[in-house]
Length: 203
Image 1 (cartoon, helix red, strand yellow):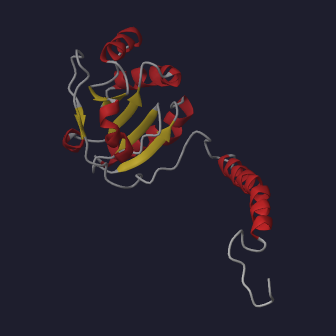
Image 2: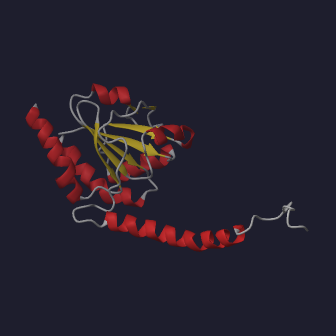
Image 3: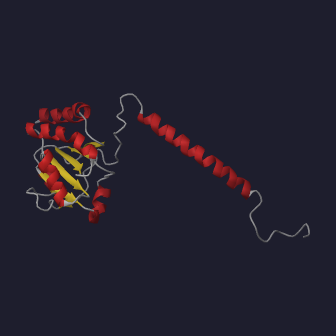
């Protein structure tokens, strides 16, 4: 090939070297991102189970969930929450969810105080399993809506990543707090009860 001829095929000069560098750097980049995430999660005062939500301080999205079949409770919707006379707790649970069992006694005790309605979203569960689970462990909910696989878009709109998850919705229909994972006594005391007390004081 003469000096003036141009290559007609094959990889561009140096492309193989860049590919090798990229393959080497990719694990390093992933490692740095993970380290940064863990450092962020371990900051003093931060609950590592609490994941920020883009929905906090925004109106709850429109949704309408039918009741759990065979359960003698009405379903849940944005309209129902808007009609509530005060704040509402919206809790996502399932019978197959182990961590849901951990937080359930907290909801039972809070329901006994009758200070705030607790609405449930039964996530990807069989109706008979949901009914059996509530019969065994108690039912703190005044409403329970079923969220099956066929309504996956509702879960996406609500920002549901898994179970359990809990939303605290103010009297104005704005999501004021969201917790991913089981609600502990500490989360209840530091995040939920102070907000409820503040709203109660405002009348």
